[in-house]
Length: 113
Image 1: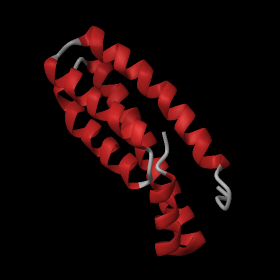
Image 2 (image 1 turned 60 degrees about the vertical axis):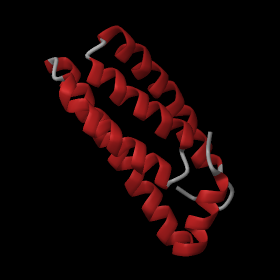
Image 3 (image 1 turned 180 degrees about the vertical axis):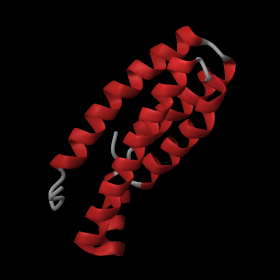
């Protein structure tokens, strides 16, 4: 789910170019952090994931990706618990929601990313 009002406010506050740049930087940061998270999983370093999950959640919320923010928090919780089965299920959900959310962002009128 996308909080369209939050995105609209971002565009009003930063202007079209500024908001587009902000969204692009946010998406890139989310992508970089999630790649880092994947590396931690491969190393079995689940304890390192929770702070990154919080970052993804905050950045997602900043650009109105409320579902992605919520699932990112869930990812951090399952990582803190050390529950690999639940973590993997949440990771798969995060990937699905992330793909869907980003597709919705690109389709928003006025966003020429």
